[in-house]
Length: 310
Image (cartoon, rainbow, N blue to C red; front, top):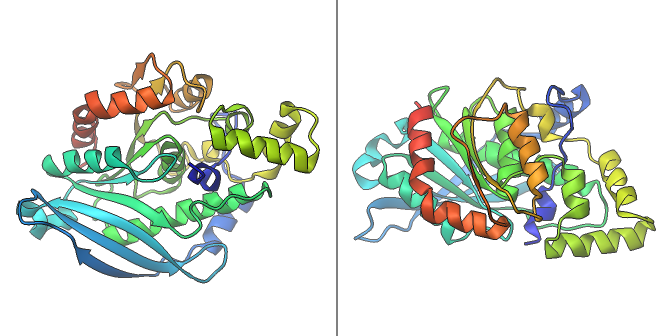
């Protein structure tokens, strides 16, 4: 669950905000697109899909030293000769890291003729620090990790690539989708906007512990003071990127009784995207909605990507 700290990113309240030039310059100068890859085929004889573990070596945007990114790709065996031509979805896992639900989405996407890539690790992805500037460092690393994966996947067409993210994976997917011109669509499950409020008020156990530690360390007298400090500390705000690289096709699942990523903040993100058609809501909390989506709506998500990707 600590993974949520490394990827926490703040959102602006303005739907029409634009990323500051200083932030764009920071992203540009810290990213090196060069990668080296090592592939290991893990497919068993009876599997429908070719399952390949990939380890990428790339320059970490913070340390400027070589680091590791790991992913697993899924392609139907009958389609592997044309894998790079297939509609492709990058799967970003939720708080706590990759789990059976993410593998399930990948299997559904693959079975329906698409290429899926599940990102399982990048260096410092679970780093947790009292220093509130860690959130910008986490955002840079999350964005860079996905961009390196995109370099590896090498999409050929403007609308070939989409993102699928759950919880913190939906938050990082929103940043990537906004920034990356090579990503044309995203399915976001219980993702939200207004992260100062989410960090300060979420009931998630690790966020609650971090709040207590920071309030004691910095001697904040109230949760509002803590939230205000977060708003001042973090400069990379994905809400600023909503329309940065062009209007994107978005699908969302909103949990209407959520206090982990509060429902209010989910609706804020939904409205920022112009209330995307086809999105769904479920009268459950964070975990119940994640489980419900995986159990009932995997083909809804698959069909969404089949329709919007080319």
